[in-house]
Image 1 (spheres, one colour):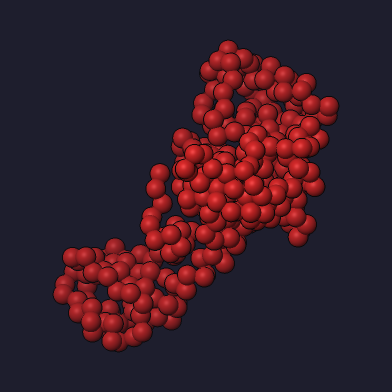
Image 2 (cartoon, rainbow, N blue to C red):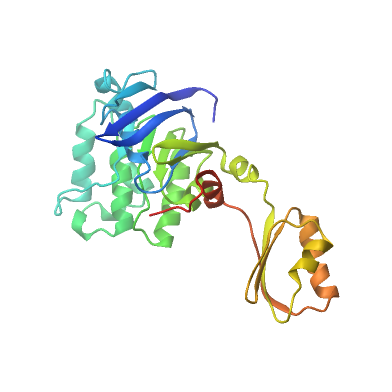
Length: 306
């Protein structure tokens, strides 16, 4: 990944009647990174991306993609980008090879689509009709259609929605392989885990505004929260006394379930030693690390909504 900016968005706004879908958004995307635009459904992610792709006009603001204005220079830009839309469909009886061959014919330059199908694990499905593909195979086909013109920029939009866990992880590996081939990926998703696992940097959007932007690790570190220890106590536990024994973070009790926020690994070890030395019986102890979901909650005051 380089520091060269290939997407620049400044003060982007888009409204629909009284609804501000995108409300003064600014950010940059660097060459060779996986950049995530993350937030709940209806947050403004897809509208933002469609403005960047030139599929939708903004009300105000400036957008530059590969040095071009998407609205004024669409004919020059579109052959250099690959777009996988949130909702895509093909003719039910169209065969896989017919779809990629058709899309390849639309561009002045295209890759060897036979090799592309091989790389995406679709070679054995080349003669299958679209209606006979599984959900994961359809998603890989749409990625193939987005890559057939050998784009510099790829835009997957809600790529893994509706996929089972195995297919979702396979898609994550596919996105990483696209980045490793020198492409830049701008990914939109409402799955925080997906953004945390895949993205070099993420912009968290809520109600049309960017509420946080950084690497996933830096965003999580900014919370200043350490490890959360959760266990079930099999006897009475004086949480007030436990709190006085060390400078723990928040201690929560819900019946037998206890949750303690430890600010460091040393505190975590001290907590367990205290429980053992005091003879408290406990079970189901586990540790939880803060996630991007916690970052979203901290910045918006509410949990993610579907």
